[in-house]
Length: 348
Ligand SMILES: NC(=O)c1ccc[n+]([C@@H]2O[C@H](COP(=O)([O-])OP(=O)(O)OC[C@H]3O[C@@H](n4cnc5c(N)ncnc54)[C@H](O)[C@@H]3O)[C@@H](O)[C@H]2O)c1
Image (cartoon, rainbow, N blue to C red):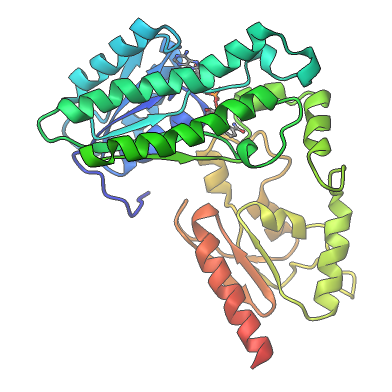
């Protein structure tokens, strides 16, 4: 498996890399050639991430690609110690990803039920902890022989929309977005780039455990229609578009929305059509093959679709007439290009 970014020789640390998004970021950094310090409060989970990275790089000779650094980043002194230990093990620091952050046990509640402790707890573990992480990392980057580096902070999509029941978390992450812009300007002259990425809802273990009925209701409350879209609604829309010769496009798990749709003759919409989507191999690679309701590639094939795919996580998209499908998030650009081609064909 390869990605286009080459970080050979880079030294990276990822906080909260024992699970979820942080773990996958650490694995991708290692795939790009970086040596990664995996920081986590849970020693077993940090070791597990290092083991996964070692497994993937068993064939490449040389130095280990990952080292575990264990400690509690909520303790200011322990955070400083962890960053120092990571830097010592790596021999410097080029990339830092600050990924720790969460709703916390008290954070997910209506505003009227939140007390001061809950506010401080969630602000501390999302905003203050990340600010202090940036400070520790930037100090190293400024002082090391070859000054400079990259700091990436994980914020949230919740910062761009109302977040009922998650108000403190969203406010903390929004504040973090703002802090990132300030830090980017303060640290730019030191050759340090500071950025944020804002993932949408991602089914990590923590999120799966937090998806109570109440949480689902909160998600629905933040949706303009105030309800989840039903599966057959999407199928009906796809069927109508098909009858009317309109373009249908989907990427990654999006083609799951095609499986219930039928052609005018009652056969499955995807039957005899070339189609791509998140592959079974990719599902296994992210460890969700037992969690998803069905394996998309398998289901598309069962329905008579002519499934095609490329290497795991590499861009792959195809067009079959009015149907455009892409394999994974990296395929989004190619999928959009094919939709543009299909639209141009229509107006030609
Ligand atoms: N999962 C989502 O839907 C989602 C969406 C948007 C943003 N995010 C953000 O992405 C980041 C990662 O989320 P996730 O769902 O992958 O989290 P997760 O709970 O799956 O993993 C977090 C990791 O951080 C470690 N950790 C927690 N507190 C720590 C501490 N004090 N010191 C050291 N390690 C600690 C945990 O042990 C765990 O391994 C968070 O900042 C979260 O706010 C997540």
